[in-house]
Length: 88
Image (cartoon, rainbow, N blue to C red; front, side, top):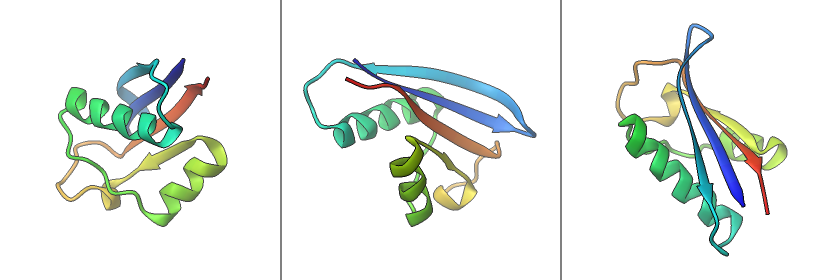
């Protein structure tokens, strides 16, 4: 089972969160991208851009934050944080 937890924060307060589970036999990368797509649909967000810093943080900690720099449109929160909470 693969599970990814996503949260949006504004002024250090969590606004919304969701956990996406994936039971497929796909690669970790595909699972992360599918989960992020699902989060964007649930939170009504545009897809964030993976910058070098976000990729590095995610590889190192299985957790990263997407700030305004990662989005094309304006966001009404400070950052979107994603974290892998369970892996196969």
